[in-house]
Each structure stands twice: as structure tokens, then as C-alpha cells.
Image (cartoon, rainbow, N blue to C red; front, side):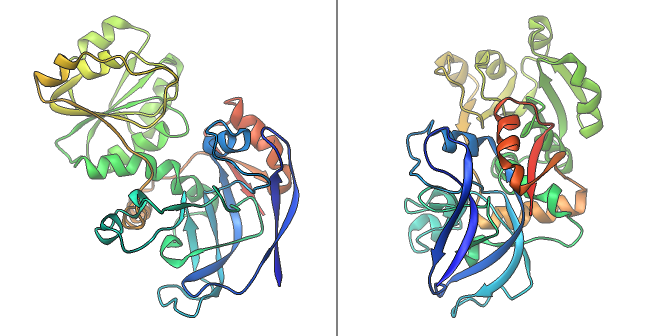
Length: 335
């Protein structure tokens, strides 16, 4: 029986320690992937600390994985040895429910997250259903593509599924781990893009990433000036916001999509939604279909994460820096 070596949390908030787990015969629909890179997502911090109450210890975090297929199950026909693939938040789904049948596997009630109830990517290898090991275009570098597998798809999916197009005016709240990717993808869709941030000194960078306009959200006057301007606004931050001001900034039939969970309930006037058919929505990760498409768009439009690289053995330092918001903008572990 083979073993996989990784770094595991053994209790809530604990340091990651060396950990091995045994694996048996490869399941018929699975592939084994030798990991070269794994992004450190803020969700990993929440899981290590058991902030969501779903962690079981010991477990190996990590769900922004890039690596090479080293073994394929007996029924796998869509992957072959040597393929470079990416694995995001999801490792499997039932494959037969209405959501799986229509290509929304991420909404499957039996979806299996990559590192919840199983061991993830801070390791030398991982096994997942082959449908969730997505081929990576050759032009994308492994370090820069790893964060796209969670952070990237989180901002890409709402743009795709809320039908962003060249006529759309899109706002992105926050220029950080998600926001800097949201700006790039919105620009790739051909949208007119506005970056919203509390940090005035990020304006130049936001424009370099592709934003056409910049709004300082600490300036209430500036927020009032953009009332009724946007078809779609992505909120990528986890802090409390004046969400009513962003609803006010929507055009008729516009949508505010919440991607970061703020600690307090959203305070929004119901009539402000009713009167002009506005909407507030949430969006998690994306389906394998969306991941395929996102990686193709990233390759053709030169979308990539801004990263800081750490050796896998230094995962504790990387997690600490992510937890303290000291990384610009995504940390990536390299084997």
C-alpha cells in the first residue's frame, strides 16, 4: 500500500506538521497527480482554524493544485500519463443528479471538496476524480495559474453566468487576492471596468490591471456620483461594506454578486431592489466546464495571478502571511 506525504493540521489553529497517509488501489474513475504547486487560499486558513465548524483532524489543506498525472484509473479515458492538470475546490460529485447532468457539478449535494473530509494539496500527490483534474494550457506558468483554480474561478463564474459582455459596465470591490483577478477577467470580457477600493494608493495598479476607472469607497461623494452606473458589481472583500451604496450604483436589472462573506448581515432596502429589478446574488466556485473555459480565456488574454512563492516546507510561514493579509496577492507553495 502506497503512502502520500504532506503537511497536516492536527487540531484547530495548529501548526502544520509532517503527515503521511496510506492510499490503496486507485479508484476506476480517479487519477493520481504529482503536485508541483499549490496555492494558499484564505479558505485554507479558515479550515485550519475550523472557523466553519467542518474540519476534521488531522487533515492536509490545499485546493489550488497544479501537477502532473502519474496514474489513471481503469475507466479513465479523458486523461493520460504526463498531462499537466489543475485541481480546484472540488474533487468529485455524484455525476447523476440534475445539477451534475446540466454541468453544474459544483452545486451537487454530494459534491466532495478537495480538502474537506479528505486530504488536499499541501503534499507531494493527490487523487481525485479525473473530471475535476482540468488540463492546463501550455502557455500558463504553474505558479501563476495555481490561484486561478479557486480565486480565479470565483470571479470568472459570476462574469460568465451573469452574462457580462462588451456592453457591460462592471465594478470590482477590493483589489486583493480575488479583486486583482476580477479586474483582469472583466477586461478580458470586453467590459468597462471600475475598481472600488479603500486604498487610494492602489489606483495606479488597478489601472495597470485593466480598470478604466477607480473609485475610493471612503469618499461618499464619489460613491454617489456613480449611482445607477453598473450592470454587475463583484464584491470580493470579506469586511463589512455599505452594500446599499453599491445597490444604488447598479443600473436597472443590475446585480450585486457577493463573493466574500462579511461578518455582519447585509443591510439592504428591499424597495431599492424592487423598483428597478435589481438583484443581490452569491457565487461559489465553478464547474469543470467553467474551469476549462476560464483557463482558456486566461491563456488567450494573458490573465495571471500576482504571486509570492514559498517552498512547500515553509507552508506555515505562507499560511501566517495570508492570515495576516501580508501577501501580494496570492501565496503559492512549490514542491
